[in-house]
Each structure stands twice: as C-alpha cells, then as structure tokens.
Image (cartoon, rainbow, N blue to C red; front, side):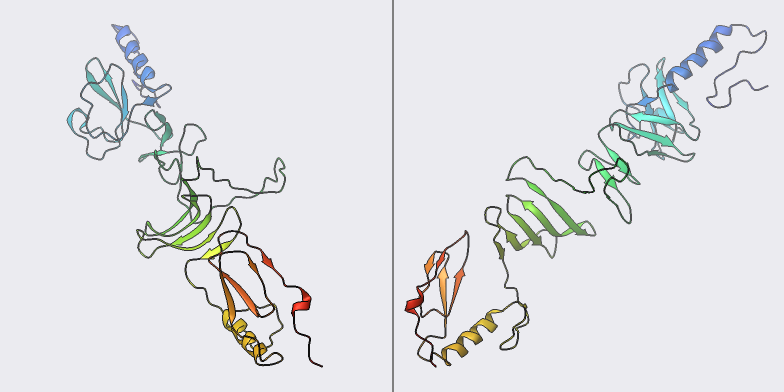
Length: 299
C-alpha cells in the first residue's frame, strides 16, 4: 500500500504508527496550500526577499534561482521559514492574484484559461493591463443573437471619454501601424494612412457637424465621354469640357469658365455656367437667378 494519496500526495497514517499527529498535520498543511489555490505571482525567477507565512507562488521560470532551484513548474509555499514545492498534476487550477486570471496546468506548463471572471480575458494568448481582451486567431465572428433570440441587429460600440480622445481601429503590418480610422482626436470621422507607423496622412475626413467629406489628396476618376448621359461621376475635366462647348455653341458670347467661390454663400448670375465652392467647411447657400435674366433661346 502506498504511503501517500494518488492525486495530491497527502501522507497517509500507517497502522501502528507513532506520533500520528505529525503525519496528520502534514497532510492538513498540504490541503491548506492547495484547496482554493491562489498564488501571488508567477513571473518571479527567485524567491521574494520578505515572504509572509503561507505565501504561494507559481514557478514558471525554466531556470529559477535561490531557494527555488529545481522547482520549475511547481507551486511553492513559504512555511516555517522554508520554501516547500508541490508538483502539479494535469488539471490543477491556480488563481493569480496580481493578474486576476485563472491558470491551468496541462501536464507540461501553466497557461491562462478563458474565463469571464476578473478583468482580463486572453484567448490563445495572454491579456495584460493595456490589452485586457487579447485574441490570437485566424478569424473572429460576431453574429446577431438567434438564441435568446435578439432583435436581429449586431452592433459594436466604441465609446471614448471626450472628443479629444481616440475611438478607432488600427491596422498594422508586423506590429507597425499602416492605417487608422475612427473619431481620432475629435468628433470628425477620419481615415489616416502611414508608410512607416510614425508619420500619418489624413486621406479623408467627414465633418461631424455637416457630414461634408473632404479629401486631403486630389482624388481622380476616369473622365466620361462627351454627352455621357449615364450616372457616372462627372469629373472636373468633363464639366470644363461641357462648359467650354456650351460657351462656343448656342451662346457664344457667354463665358466658358467655371466660377470659383471660396467657401461662402453665392448668388448665381445668368453668365455663370458652373459654380464651384472651394474649401467647403459648412453648409452654404446658392441663390438661383430669376428666369427673366437668362437670354431667350434661339429658334
């Protein structure tokens, strides 16, 4: 018959054994250390300088030093002035007080388990004080609740403290940022890009107050052919060509140029073929001229 229990290795009292209380108390001490196991830390490579009676630690370092030499992977407890190690078995659980996470022993190493308790969740990786939710996966799925069931909607909310803060998404290559989008440093929605992760250029911005979209660069598009009647976007070149043709056609005396207005209201005249407002920052009003001001069409 073995002199210890199978799973926890508690010492057993032998028949006719003298001083049975010693063996009994030793078993109670092991139970006290392992039941509701909560360790203070797992990242130390050597014992702390001033441990308290009963302190417990996970020794995950591959080469611990000092009184923990040879204790890699073990649960160690400080009792009666010495460190005592307990060899874990597969399935042991330990709560790490400094991380507020539960770790499990898989027979080879200690690793955090996914749990809704505490203030961190790590899936296939370790969460930390900054990234309290950390996931390593080829894909992630968020779907509407068809179990409860829910409304059929699926929303993800990013809420920041104040306008000057950031609420957005970061896209990286090799942990170096290449694109950002969201409400960054204000309430306008912006898209920024970067070639190196340190210098960013605003590609576009949508004003929160007006919904007006502005481009930092000059976007281009194919120019439709003359008299194109489709719903394709009319480029500047297309409009300029149409204005020029109109000016040299039915009303050769009128100007074929575009009237440029600098971010202000404007009253359109009969001589204006097209009007362009540059640097638009807020809603502006364009007033049409009376029909009588236009020349009569030739018959």
